[in-house]
Image (cartoon, rainbow, N blue to C red; front, side, top):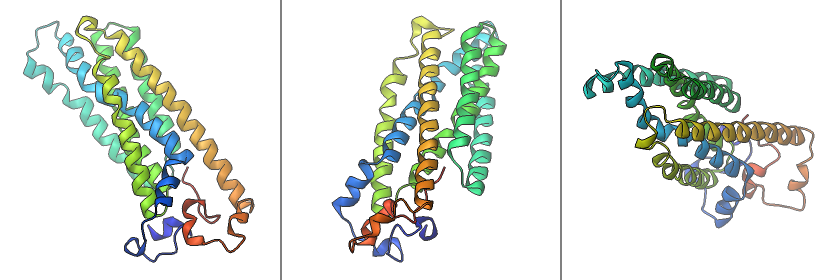
Length: 249
């Protein structure tokens, strides 16, 4: 974590950092916090609603002959697929030090899954669509949280920003609860369309974040942020604004 700070903190470790309300302001008034909190909101909406429609789609595979227990057991394969992709994506993302591009891939896969769910009433194709949704959207949750943590420093800024991100994202439960209504079963076109829309918003937000990070890092490499060190400023209070700090893409 000290190495990741890239000059954002003069403290040798977290225990030596001191709290300041400046850190709180820096966490909230930050493009990373704003964009990635909204992106998490857009991503977690379909995650919250996923379990609401999955058993109904699976039950339709057996033309109503599947018991509740059988239907619930068949929810395991899509979730197991998501489990594997979460671990694999997280591992590769950490090894490469990249977050955003992997999120764009996941969002795209999930969008394809929802398109399949909307465009056909074939239960087998719908079931395949649930695999794509799960494999695409579930890895995005840890990625977006890790991305913001990487781009905020020092410790108190990171802690505040992460808290704000989770608070904003969890508001998605209000949407997810009312998107899959009994009257729309078994196709749930409205619910799928809403989630498709939120994924579109997430794609735009993540793309914007990647562009912002690339531009800002380039400016710092060119010395266009070195003026922040002028005038005897306390470098320990610059945090992620320190010219030596590099954002994760």
